Structure formats: C-alpha cells, structure tokens
Length: 147
Ligand code: HEM
Figure 1 (cartoon, rainbow, N blue to C red):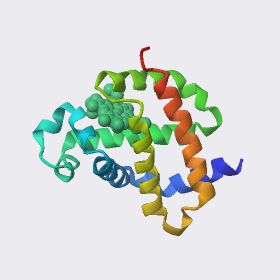
Figure 2 (cartoon, rainbow, N blue to C red):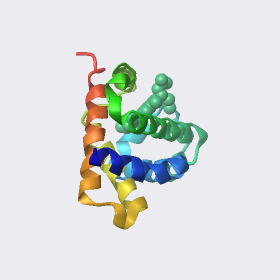
Figure 3 (tube, protein in one colour):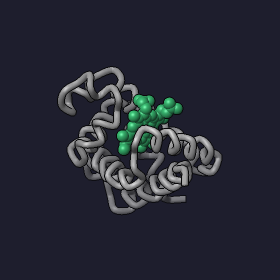
Figure 4 (cartoon, protein in one colour):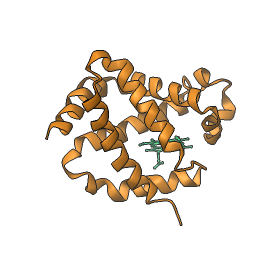
C-alpha cells in the first residue's frame, strides 16, 4: 500500500549510501545518549563520539545496522520472516547491556537521519510509515530479551 511505497522510495536513494547515513544516525544517537557509546567494548580504543564513529569497528556496526534496515525494507510484505533473526539480534543486544528503552532514542535518531537527508520529502505520512516499520522491528527484537 501507500506506506510501503513511501518507505521503499525514500530508502532507494538512502540505501545507496548506507555508511554516511548511518554515521548521521549514530552521531545523533550518541549526542542524545552518550552513555550508549560505552556499551561497545571497543569504545575504549577511541576518545569522543566523532572519533569512535570513524573507527573501523564502529563503522562496521553502523553498516550492520543499515543492512538490517535494508532487510526490513526488502521484506515489507513479509516482515514476519525476519522474526527469528530479529529476536536473536535482540538477545545479543541484551547480552551487551542494551536496554529495550534505548530503542526509543534509536528511533528518534533514525527519524533525524531521514529528516536531514530527505529534506522536504520528509513528510508526516512518511515519518509515520517509518515509525510503523521501526516499531515492528523493535517489537521483534524485544521478544529476544530473556524474561
Ligand atoms: C552487534 C551495540 C543498535 C544491529 C552489536 C554489538 C554491540 C551493539 C556492542 C556487538 C559488537 C559488534 O558487533 O559491533 C548496539 C547499541 C545499539 C545498537 C548500543 C543502540 C542502542 C542496533 C540496531 C540494530 C543493530 C538498532 C539493527 C536494527 C546489530 C547487528 C549486530 C550488532 C546486526 C551483529 C550481531 C551479530 O554478531 O550477529 N550491537 N547496537 N544494533 N548490532 Fe547493535
């Protein structure tokens, strides 16, 4: 439907430059919640957030995140097929000390990245479409948290 079209069309250009857009997203994330930086074991190898985000390990994680978003966009018609992958991914994040509440600020950072790269194409319906997809991804990841 319409929401899926908005997501696919906007991702078409962004997805070609995953790393730069992912850096915008994570720069925002570490501005909003600098403590998240310390959950990366390799953050001891760098100083401030901008320096960390230019290090290979951080760039690799940024790339991994963008690939998960890419997979979600490709599977808009059958997101449930990613359920096991995403709940396992959630479990791994619990293991490194991420709290499910942090996904709220991750979502804000995702929207910030979309807004800054799409400019006027960032509309209320587009924002809502992305929020809906993101909330499905987060619910699936959250199911991986051991109770
Ligand atoms: C792995 C932290 C958000 C996708 C990791 C690792 C850490 C981490 C410490 C293990 C080291 C590494 O592989 O680099 C965080 C923090 C986040 C966050 C602090 C924000 C609160 C996300 C999000 C996604 C994601 C939103 C995708 C939707 C991945 C993937 C891996 C990973 C695919 C590799 C898992 C594997 O080894 O199988 N994350 N992450 N991360 N993260 Fe995140």
